[in-house]
Length: 201
Image (cartoon, rainbow, N blue to C red):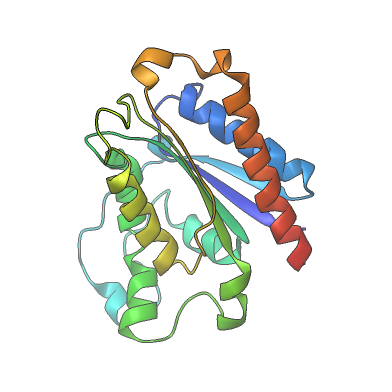
């Protein structure tokens, strides 16, 4: 059974971003996948301290709540990143989580020995869900920072980027529960990701 990890970047476990992730994961379950939701802001960990232990060894010397997720990310078939836009990028705790994956960066680009087996690289896929308070009509580049950071995270963890669901103008929308069509888009995107992974199994 394919395994999908959903990373929630929002500090609100029942907020709009969480609602999108919940729907996407439900869609993946409908497609026959196992899922795990990770509330990143509630993990206890320090950001990367650039000790650079991982330049030489395939491990991070910082041991904390984040440590088990190195193996979980290696084992995952799919990753969903769900985040609000904050200061034109991902929230600090989610960025810190992603930065700690320098252990994957040094394995792949430094030692040329990726932690994800080469035969699995093309079988791993990602989905990005993001919301912004601002409208793209007002700020056309509002999702650019989130896209770049998430794209870099997918790259170093050998996950092929897939669909994006970008919802803007949340300062006016306020409550996504009042927009069932958008929630169905998230569920459908998760279902498609799950079907893609299940088709490879």
